[in-house]
Length: 126
Image: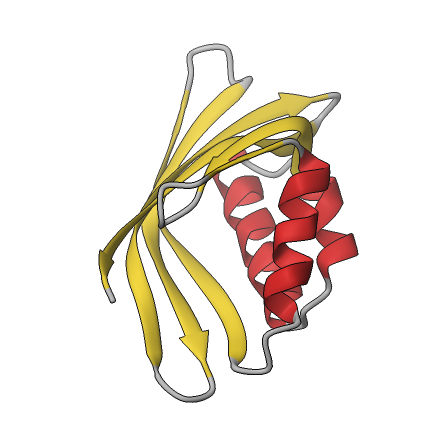
């Protein structure tokens, strides 16, 4: 059985790969239907449909390459049903190093699988 921290880190690596492949539809299983995301510019995105639409729109930008999120820590609640992932993120483009910052993701375990319940991205450098 995979340790929860390892499972969450593995799922994060998969989301990074799907973003780099510009495959928005395949990101859907990683998000809870009622996910809440605060983007680096402070905008609020509510629901998995809206998150997937936002990714799809970014993937249309010919300069966009990827977002890479690198976990620094994963902390579990005492019941093992929720986890907080904290790390660094960077946007990559074809022409320049993009914005970067820190993030916090809340994961929820449902029927044995980890889903992103909420994410907060803070831009610290342009």
